[in-house]
Structures are given as structure tokens and as C-alpha cells.
Image (tube, rainbow, N blue to C red):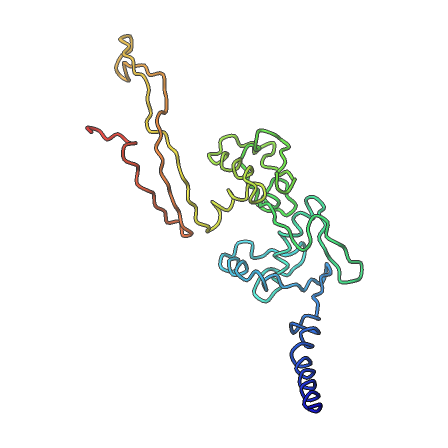
Length: 267
């Protein structure tokens, strides 16, 4: 009986050694080989987790030559794609506002302040007037909220939508920019930038005026041509609601105009 207990105990010890102890030592292979995160030797492969984003960039070619600021490594397959990631998601705010991100591998390391590894970033960080990169500026907009020093509610930064010669004021999409800034899901006006400039589908629930109405008054003092009527009292009245949807290829469709909202001549 005593011998049987010893055998069972031995089996238990062996089982613990085989199944339990290895998991207390190392759960994953490779978990004790850390990436170098120093500023000049950043080995972290962003595409390990963001392969879908990498594929999008490789398919479009836009921003495909970005690097992490002065580095000759452009974003091409096998050529340090994480440097291009860092160009927007680290360097942009480092240059604009002195943000500090975590860096270093034990020698002169720096803890992140505003962000750890990366931050979401406003498109205007690189595409505002007087940007640090020579990137095309998104001009033609009046400063949102008619204020020369507005603050983006997400990042806490402000961006130059205008300069002395590009004052805007006639942009059809001014309201789109202002609404996107007020919607704080993304930085600044990114929703508007992405809606027009990328492949994401867009659905818009439009509310239109139903009719243009005005007065036409006969004036016998006017001679034909061109007319003998004066017009006044212009109004846009009634509402029509319609939904439009555009997919990533630019193909679009519109929901049917609601019955009863639109008068058809003779009905």
C-alpha cells in the first residue's frame, strides 16, 4: 500500500513537471527577446499588428515614400515600413508641438508623456499651411468657427487652415469641416478628410428644401426684352429627406424620393 502511494506521488510530481512548470517559466516562444526601441534603431514591426493598414498603403501608393524624418528609407516592401508609420504617428506631433513618445532600450531611455508608442494624428498636422514637411496644404477653407486660434477638442492643438493669401470663405464643404471638428471620434476634421479622400463608403442622410418660392410682379414700365416682371420674396420651403450612399469605388445610389413630399405637375 505504501509503495502504491509513492508511485502515485511520483506520477503526480512528473505530471506537474511536464504540464505546469513550463507554463510558469515561458508561455510563448520568443517572449524573452525584446525589440530595440531606441530612436535610431527602432525594430518594432508595426505591421505585425497592422497588416491591413500596410496592405492599404501598398495598394494606393499615396504616402508610400514617407520616412521618419530625414531618413532615406522609404516605405517599400521589406524596407522598414514602421518608419513610415512613425512619420505620421510620432514625428508629426513631435515636430509640431514637441510631444514626447516612449523611446530608448535602456540607455538614455525616455518615458512617453503625451503618448506611449504612437498617437492618432490629425491630417492637418502635415497638411496645414506652413507645415514642417513641404506637404501640400489643404487650403481654401475659412478658419473654423471664424476664430483664428480655435483648439481641436481631441488633440488640444490648432491647425492653420488659412494664411494671408488663402483665406477661403467660399468653400462648399466648410460646414463639413466644422461639423467633423465638433465630432470628437477622430482628431480635428479627419472625418471630412477621410470621407472625400479615401475609399471608405459614405452614407449621407440629406434634408433638402422642397421648393423654391418667390413673388413675380408685373411692371408695365419695363419693356421686353428682357422682361416685364420684378421678382422678390425668395424662400426655400418644405423638406424632402433622401439618403445617398457611395461605396469605395465611387459608385453611388440614392434612395427613392419619398412620396407625398414632392409635387408632380398635374397631380
